[in-house]
Amino acid sequence: MSTRSSAGSGAEVFGGRTEQWAAWQAEPWGRLRYAVAAHTTSRALAGLSGPLRIVDVGGGDGADSLPLARAGHDVTILNFSGPLLHAASAAAEAAGVGHRVRTVCADLDDLAALHLDGQAFTGSFDAVLCHNVVHHRPDVPATVTDLVALLRPGGVVSVMAPNPAMDVLAAAVRRADPEAALDVLDADTVHSRTFDHPMRRVEAATVEVALQAAGCVVEHHFGIRCVMDLIADDDLKRDPAFYERLERLELALCEREPYRRTARFWQLTARRR
Image (cartoon, rainbow, N blue to C red; front, top):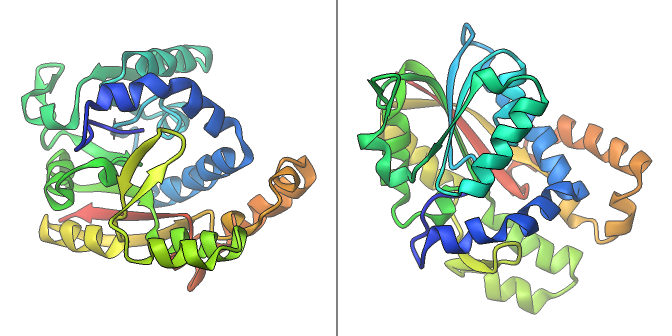
């Protein structure tokens, strides 16, 4: 989900649209996003010996991190939305992993002052997830620096955001609207229909540079939803047989050139030196 927005109250913009977010997650494009992200994130964490201490920054209802709790890791979910954190706790209990999941109602800007079991957040985690957050932040490099500071040496950070390239491709190919594609080509923001709010268009290269400057080595560049957003027939995506075939294809494409470069979401994972 997200932390405090650079424009307006984050709690009002995001926390007040939990129903819309849940509806998006239930659609094939939402389910596919999480299915591929679970695969890529587990790949990125495979080199770490567990059980791991993981913090999901802006983790909302825990859809990204609860699979890791089910895999035996200890998960802390940080978000400012009480309803989303309540949903995360309920889902964790339903999955039998409530004892491995903690929720913290706080913003990304509060990280320096936070403690867990008497220990500061800074430098205490084996892995940090920050998915669908940085494009809502006013200073992306500073946000990346704050995320890396949470890691122990050798820990892994995963950052994900919408890919600006797909804004253009989806307009031109899916919607057959060349004018809209031209309009968005050099735009700084696009409008999120789910949250009815503008979001920045952040390139993976910007975050890669910030990760390197913060003392990390980038290990993976994944693409999430490489082709789904180019298919105009949403009803076809809701067909279980077609969805299954599409998911197999997406899993095969997620780390391959050139497909990962134009996917709906980019995901970078990096290891702290």
